[in-house]
Image (cartoon, rainbow, N blue to C red):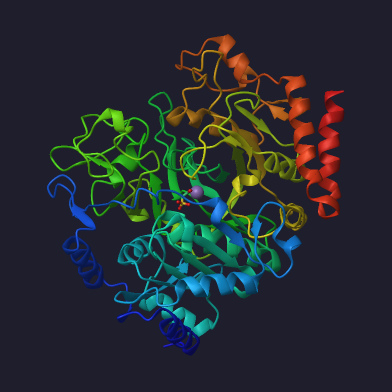
Amino acid sequence: MPEAVDRWVQEVRALTEPARVHWCTGTETEAAELTAQLVKSGEFLPLNAERFPRCYLYRSDPNDVARVEHLTFVCTRSEADAGPNNHWMAPQAAHQKMDALFKGAMRGRTLYVVPYCMGPIGSPYARCGVEITDSPYVALNMRMMTHGMGTAALARIAREGSFVRGLHSTGELDPERRFIMHFPEELSIKSYGSGYGGNALLGKKCHALRIASYQARSEGWLAEHMLLLALDSPAGETHYVAAAFPSACGKTNLAMLVPPAAMPGWKVRTLGDDIAWLHPGPDGRLWAINPEAGYFGVAPGTNSKSNRNAFEMVRHDTIFTNVALTKNGDPWWEGMEGEPAIDWQGRPYDPKNGPAAHPNSRFTVSARNNPSYATEADDPAGVPIAAIIFGGRRRALAPLVFEARNWRHGVLVGSGVASETTAAITGKVGVLRRDPMAMKPFAGYNFADYWQHWLSVGERLAKPPKVFHVNWFRQDAAGKFLWPGFGENLRVLKWMMERVAGRAAAHETPIGFMPARADLDTQGLGLAPATLDELLAVDAPAWRSDLAHLGGEFDQYGTRMPEPLRLELYDVLRRFG
Ligand code: SAT
Ligand code: MN
C-alpha cells in the first residue's frame, strides 16, 4: 500500500465521514458485486438479457446530464497562468469552498478508492491517478475507461510515488452546489455535485486533458482531445492518424469508420476515440498513446449505418446512461429503428416531452468490445503519427478539406477551430464558438502558452506529421448537408494518406493545399460536380473576416501571445491579397 495514498484516503475520510471505505481491486467479482448492489438499489436497470447480455441502464438526475463548463475552474496561483480561456479561482479559496462542501458529504455512504492508470500499464508515457468517489456507478465506469483499475494501478503508484489525486462526491446533485476544480500545480482535482460523465469520471477530461496538458507542457509533450486511428490501405500500408474535433462532432464515428463498398481493401482500426497523448520520439516523429481503455460515447445517431462497429460493441457488457427503452427492455435512442416505450426519465414515451433518449445520452464500454479494435493500442511505445486532423461542425466557410503548409501553419489552423455547440455541454445548441484544437473546455492553462508549447514541440520534430483541417458538416442554403459523411469520409482520409506518401496532387490556396475535384476519389458517390465545387471553394471575403475575428481572439492573450502565430495569421491574410 503506497503510504501517500493511504494518508490521503485517511484525510478525506476524516473530512467526508463515510460509513465504509472500499479499496477497489478491479476484479470481475468486485464488478459483479457493485453491479448487483446498483441493481438492488434500483439505480441500474438490467436490459433485455438475451439481446443485451450484462447491459444496464442508469438514469442520471435530469439536472445532471452534461459537462458544466461554467462551473469548471482551473486554480493556479496566478490567474494569468489559467488564461482567459479558463474560469479561475485562487487555489486557497477554491480548497476552502470545496472542503466546506465535502465536509460530512459521505455520511452513510461508501467511500470508494479507485486507483487507475491512464495509458497501457507498462508504458513510460502512462500516468496514474486515484479517484476517491462515493458513486459505485463512477467506480464501474472507471473500471472500463481506464487501464489497470485497482490492484495493478496501485502497484505502479507504489513504484513511482506520484499520482493525480481526484476527489469526487455526487453530493446532493444541486446545480447551485456543483463545482469541478482543478489544481494543476498540485496535480489534484475536486469535483462535487455531479454524477455525470466528464464531471465525475475524473480520469477522462479532468486528469487526461486538463491536468495532463499542464504536466505535458512542463515535460515536453502534448495531451490532446483527439481520436487515434490506424488506416490500412489495399496496398498494405498503415498510417496512424490523430484527429481533434469538439465533443459530439463524430470523433467516435470517424475512429470506427466502416469503409464504403466502393473502397475495397481499405480498413480503419481504432486506437482511441477521445484523447491522445503525443510525445516527440528520438526518431523525430510524433508518437501517440491513447490514455483510455474504453469509450464514453454519444448514443443518439449511432446505428448500423452510421457506425456499425459501435452498434455491435454496445450489444453486451455496456452501461447505458439516459437512453430510452423499447417495450422489450432494449435500449433505444433517436436514429435507431423501432419505437421507444419509456423515455430517458423513465416516463411513458410522449413526443410532447421531447426526444425519447437524452441528446447527450451515452454508452460506456470497454475498447476491447470494438470489432475494429487496433491491438497497437496496447503497445507501450505508442504509434507514430502521420497526420493530425482538426475539424469542427460548421455550416459555412470551412471547405471539406485543406492541408496546412507546415507545422507552424498547422498550429494556426488548430487555433482557428470553431464549431457549432452540441448537447455535450449545458447551454445553447447550434451557436458557433471558437474551440482551438477542440481544447477550449480542456486546456489546463493559458492558451497563449499552450500554442507556444505546440510551436516548441514542432521544433523538436524532424519528421512532423502533416496537419489537415476538415469539415463534414457543410450545408447548402436549404440546410441540407453537402457531404454524405460517415464511411464516405474515408475518401478524404485516402487523399490525406496519398499526400503523406507524396503521391497525391494538390494546389495551393491562401488557406493551404487543397485537392482539385479530380484529386478526390468520389467514384460512385453520385455527387454533382457543382456540389463538390462548393465543398472545395475558398470564399475570400468570408475567410478574411474569419481571420480578423481570430486575430481579435488572439488579442485577448496580450503579450503572452506567441509572435510566430500572429505572423502566420498575417501571412494567410497577405496571401488573400
Ligand atoms: O461528458 S464527457 O466530458 O466525458 C464527454 C464529452 O463531452 O466529450
Ligand atoms: Mn470528448
